[in-house]
Image (tube, rainbow, N blue to C red):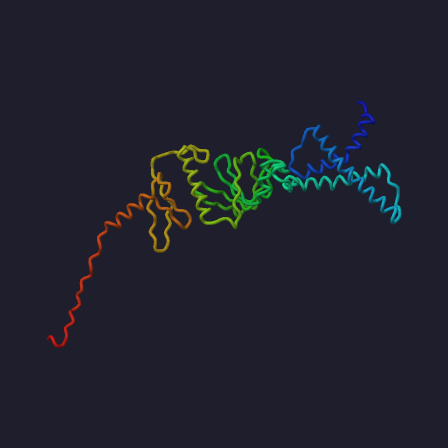
Length: 303
């Protein structure tokens, strides 16, 4: 086995600060590792920044030595050590700018519309730090706060806290004894980001629940619910009956009547029952007047 040539050692010696900066950059970001050729190009770019910073620092130290007194001579070995030390903050600064979507976020759209983030998957979690709904491939829905998430959609795990399962009828099942849960990313089909708490209103909640029920009904009619073939026995399904003070319980509706649903504290009545109710009110006979059994008042002069 032959030893590397002197020229190769000089190239490695020259590019070593750039490789150190690139190592720091990839260690602090989610960018995938590039090919060997692209790594050499990146090391060259980082080396240019390191060399520029080294020259600036050298000039500053020489000026300080002439003005306040010299502490030693600037040698080639000292310049190499300074370059390696400067590569650490330069790589960390590049990683911070990439994670903060800079400089792409600072530039106008007519220059570039790309981002500094590694992928759309990572950009979604970086731009929307909030609760998420994880729609699993088997039909289940998981809700929680993502503390950590994988770099890609096909590997890694989600670290979730404040966990809840969302049933098919939009019922939430909390897990009070579970502090955190790991979910494999390969089981997740879609990720939905919840609105901020200050933007969540009652109409938005009702619309979301209606949409979820329509999706569930469509899956049920297709014959598949949560990955299991559903049986259509022809029986009607009754809606969730709730009573409040002074109100009657709603009449059970058929399965085809998708609009007759009880959501929250308000009820969406179907069109047909409302028309029947108006027709009954119009044909209802008025109640007979109460008979006046009181004696007539007779004045004294008429007896």
